[in-house]
Image (cartoon, rainbow, N blue to C red):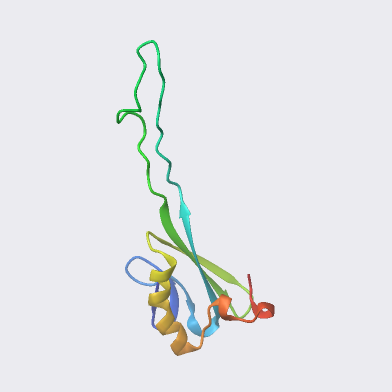
Length: 117
């Protein structure tokens, strides 16, 4: 996801799917985690089956951090982009200067009656 030439959108080498910033009413940024697992410890006694796992079995894995960026347009439409492996603060740091320069608020900064979510 990126902002270029007064448009917000995505594309690998250039913007291929985008919305003009002039059409954007507000933006919502929500961090979430997905996946991950807890470590599993096996304890059993008797009949030759003892120990605390001893490195056997699946290891714990960390959840994957993702940030959803929802763009609300002035005509009531929404576009959703997901930024993988980046938290909400990281995404906001990059979006805020451009959004402020164009007068585009975050959805949460709007009065409750004007929020889209």
